[in-house]
Image (cartoon, rainbow, N blue to C red; front, side, top):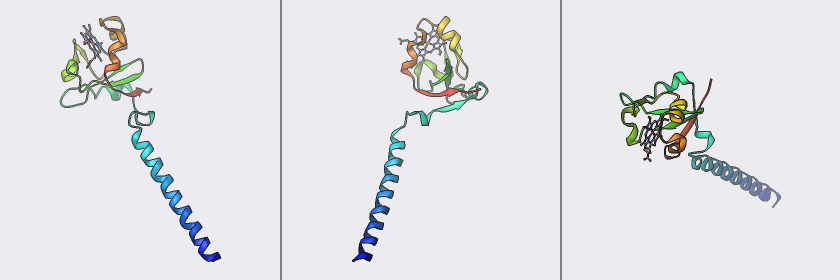
Length: 114
Ligand code: HEM
């Protein structure tokens, strides 16, 4: 009987540990837009993402990186003569008619690092 309950206890512990492992895996899969999934690029690395030759189109504003690849207004990585792959903080604030309000329409995907 003692042997049986020890075995049972061990089985329960193994099942619990395995369940906790599965729960933690699925929690991180659900977190698709969470901080864990952000990408971190230097300005030099960002320059590859110019939307040309099949590259994705990323833009940086105030240290945040936005993905404009799927935006019809950024076809080929260009928008009103501005090119993706750059920090466009100054032009979006000082040259565009819309300011930063349009950024909520495109996915925030990362942050600029030194
Ligand atoms: C003279 C310069 C610019 C002009 C005339 C301009 C004009 C426009 C217009 C008319 C729209 C559509 C707004 C609407 O549908 O309500 C738009 C959208 C947008 N603009 Fe600009 N823009 C300029 C510069 C910039 C810059 C420098 C950025 C850089 C960060 C930018 C980022 C965006 C984004 C992210 C959208 C939303 C795209 C979407 O909805 O898919 N714009 N812009």
